[in-house]
Image (cartoon, rainbow, N blue to C red; front, top):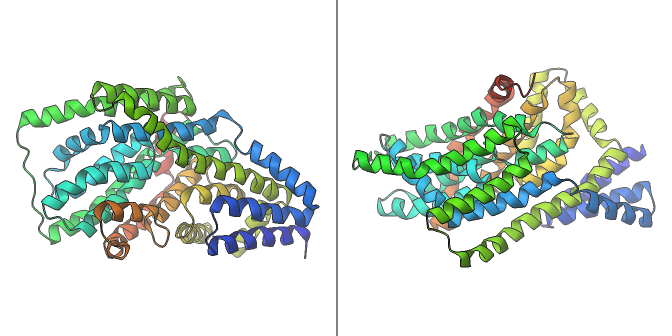
Length: 435
């Protein structure tokens, strides 16, 4: 057996074994990579390369966007920006039965478009809406499922840390093109949540809500305009080249502070806590990125992406079948591996396959992020399911029957994103960001 094959077996065998016994993902990536390097070289060389990989894994200013977006999300949580978006979406959702459920979906999409963090959207929007839903006798399992399913839309609609990571690990796909490409798929995600939610609310005869007055509607819209305008500033700046994605993250922090102080919802005494609360998620993500630098060295040195590419391409000559197999594999991976590590590990491995299939990298990025976002709401990992259950104060098992129809709707939407490339490519093509 060739040494490259032994290296691949060592790398993935140890990695998945460590995951199975509950080892932290970042340490699993580092240790399995070091073990795979020992197949190629001696122990001292493996440790030296591992040290270099940790250092080079987080080189580049683009990685600064990750902690900055986390900080911006925490500021928006504290500064009641979510509350103003929810008041606005109540006006939009009022004509529909069970308007609080649809309000949750629309508000999560808008808040995610500001913060770019799914958990922040789930906590901010769910934490605000759930007390109202409880008073109005909404089923808690249903509202928890809606909250969990809607939150990942913000990972597709810019600014998105996941799309930044895809850009870095795919070989430099344009971040601006990826950002604007996420708009239509992000809206499709929201629509895929609204359809099953609408069916449930009609079936259970949830009442519609009357807007109290035109003055209330105008006031709610006026209060939300500065937050909505922030989306235009961030994306407009990136698309026009006024600033990079990292600078956009800095602008998000600045304008979030500005809006929160203008709304008089943020105190100076709360700022240290915001930064402290941002340290842990930022550190976890960046440490994982650093450890993936070691795995990246092993993958490249042993030509593992090319080997995996050949195995997949040998499975079938039919592009449709190959894309179905890849999507199925990623859906399975997403059930036990969180989005960030899955994206970091599988992007460099699968890019040669997509290149052979003649797919545009921007389309690939949207498809992969859309697919792996579904994993955030599928057990057993299902990070957002646990977040929503904790907010709704219900056992984990009770949310599963309510979230499954939304998962199936999202898988159908994933098929559209996969086989209709223009859903991802139309907007960046119209803006001249891609050919």
